[in-house]
Image 1 (cartoon, each protein chain N blue to C red):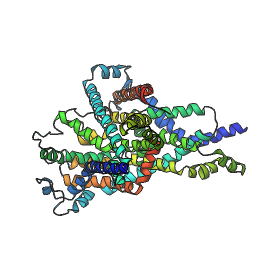
Image 2 (cartoon, rainbow over the protein chains, first blue to last red; image 1 turned 180 degrees about the vertical axis):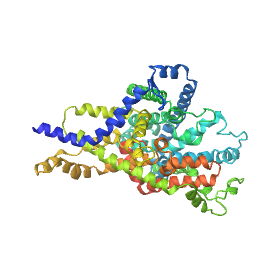
Image 3 (spheres, helix red, strand yellow; image 1 turned 135 degrees about the vertical axis):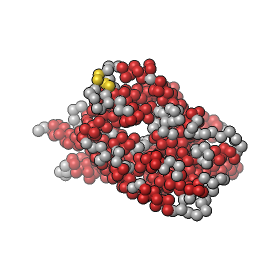
Length: 293
Length: 277
């Protein structure tokens, strides 16, 4: 064997365990899923090829899908901007030498690592309309018309959003802290010598130099928010009605409650398309506001 | 002089603001723990008591006996632990091939791996569930573990790290007659310990918190992980808030302890990788 072939053989020795698994559970699964999305199949009776029918039905007729899509977008709009802005504000405070900053960082980050299921159980109790802390608190600061969080379609999604902000704001905070710490302090000193005030340094130094981090935080938050499931599953069960039903929940119900494997696959591919488009658009427009050195 | 006084005042003001923030972040933990120790009558008392009049530790014992909670913890440990170990082995070996060895089609294959990072897990979930059914892996550790081992993120992360290790170390060992596997396992991996352990922590936490996959491949009680154990416990004891909160405390406790022990490390890891569970 030549040296080159020997290196190729060695390479495949290292690659093979992973590649075999990837071939089946990732590449194969993606291909099969795409194929499934053109079938009607309940796993019991033989599958039927229906062409684009699943997609047509989803886009043109399926009222429930339109609703879960709208709910998911509401969730994304409700969580992402708040998590990004609060995350930035917390990070700005925590990179300063304030007393007890390690404690604050831990308090903000702690919810990130606990299981969403457990967090949702606690919030189901906190948002309990009759005995929950939330309504207790609202009452004590003077509200009298207290929301019935889980039986009122107008309020149920707010509860899911509040839980998700509480749970994940620490993730954005930590990323922003890392980004802020990466800005050289010499720049601020130079600006100060030139007579720039704090606000000007923030607008002309901090924000532009932080923009790659901001971009990353926004992209990651949007991708993960579109995939919301756990919170809705435990907190509201998608209800009342379908008020907090989300795209992933709809995939779960179609595939594993109603055994519509083809239809569920088509929903999954539409979700993929939506996430891909949202990410693509952001990459496209990052030139306008993201500053790379 | 004037500047430092002003800075100090600002810092104390921010300290006050952050105290309020920390209060809201921690109150759910406190309330969960407090409720978990109450008698059911006290749970519904008005106004709510912050500290229970007597501590009912037997709530925990009750949760432990009405559902096999110890078994759930064990299952989560076995499943998350196995996925972590297998993923580290598979990902580090692949990453080594991509970072250090030349073979035809290497860059194209790597790009293909990278492309899978964009595909949401819900796309592959359905075919993998069908496969698990065909293999007879439902309600088994194998079914819970194997389909979750193969993700491109670890391959990508470790490849980037391996590439920063100077090639001289490797060449020197090769000249002394070391095999590639020796180089990989005795030089490259030990030198990459920060990246490898970060990946280990994240894989473990992510899998520990995983709900959707166990939900679809497990139906028998004794194969449940903590997450679906909690979800089904909530289904059974919907308004026994003291018991529900005791279960939630037990579901949260391993993560909280792990976090307090490895806090610095975990946060460093996030900032190193920007990884999200």
